[in-house]
Length: 158
Image 1: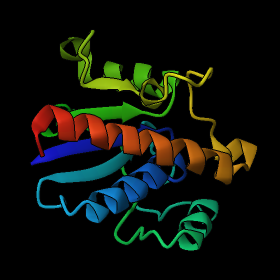
Image 2: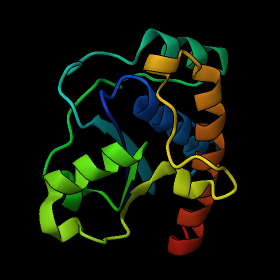
Image 3: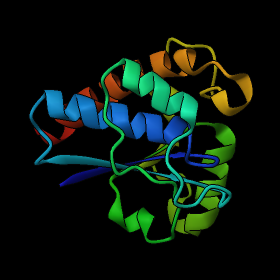
Image 4: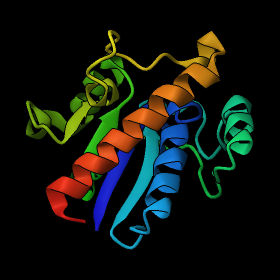
């Protein structure tokens, strides 16, 4: 099983959106028996809460399920439990590497989401909790998840 973890700050906007979109794309390709996704936050403010209302509304509009997604915090065990750890911004990546310690230094399994979208100028997925622009985030996440899925399919012959 190939496991992907998406990480943002509070695990209520960007990373649960990415988890839901990625799961949807995996299901469309009928590879859910080989690839799974989860999400987590670097902070603990929203533990056990469902995705933000703006994320839920947008996912509903696109017919994408977020069933079972609840906020949780990144754990040390996540490093060994996931093959890909995709951070929504530079700050999240720095915080995740701090949780994982020296074993994650320079390790390519931990990377920024925007690395999946090399044609975009920004290093970070904007946080719609502050910007309110969930649609912009969805567009980035949709394309980035497609690129990640293609990368995984190629690398693992999934």
